[in-house]
Image (tube, rainbow, N blue to C red):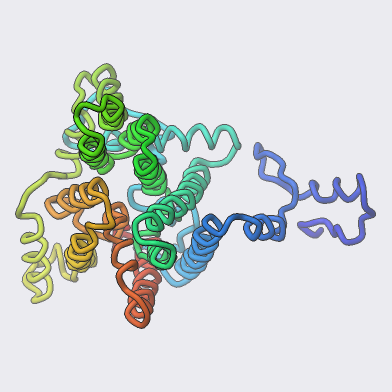
Length: 425
């Protein structure tokens, strides 16, 4: 028996509609009508160019990641020689912890000897659970759907910011580089960065339009996604001070800008209050990250990375580290890119507002001094003004070479990231 009905022989009307909906569905899953790409493509073509271009680029790069995941499924295996399924690949690394949080929520105590879900912020797992239960799909599918959709929204918003800062041509280059940057793999995984960047970029766009209440609300939601989002708090503070100075200290309407920095900590503050009642300490997430993931801040983080990588390269690291750790290589490459991008950002300070520079600098400081999360591609795409400014400044052959090298790294790094534990996203 064929798996799909032969709809070509059905007459129009009710019989044809019945044939289209006769496609077998998994037990408990909602019934969906047959899907065809033509309506989606026609709707995409009818959108305003400011929407159409970033969405088209984003869609094409998601197809590239889908092909990479398909190839990784067949060419790479785990330590036991097994091929990974799509669900395992897109929920690799921290993705499995977000899934665990969505299923089991948080323990009532801090365990300093075993990793647990307290190390992860609540907004993304809550959306995963709600979407999964509403649509009747596994949580890894709902998490992937949220990442894909919010990643698309983040791309559009980032493109609008780039257009405001540098103009149309630079914005198109910035969007293209943003989508092929290796860190964009997290938009195709069960990760929070799509949601985080959508909220942060939306908050920045609201700041550009002087909509301070909206900016604060979006920033407050962002700080419930992950600790890196706390960089939006000083960014909102700088934006508010700039607005008050621009209008003058005696103009009371300018003081409305303080709504943004006042509301920005709402997410992390709400999470801390919940943890206080749930576990007995508002610092439960911080303590879990510190003791179970060994996440600390130290100025010696990068020197340690260089020293460890040197020992591995000359073969003196011993049996625990017989090979070179690709994460350390990615950290050094990321550090070099960050320095290069910050130079461009400083030169572009007449176009890029101070709050965006502050956001980038704070994230750069976080990742350069982090003991467990060095400047890899995922952290760099969070500092998205640094990614955008490089593409905005390069033109012609220089930009083509940048795009080609980034695409090669995207494919190579994704093959290792999707399967196994060789390279973190």
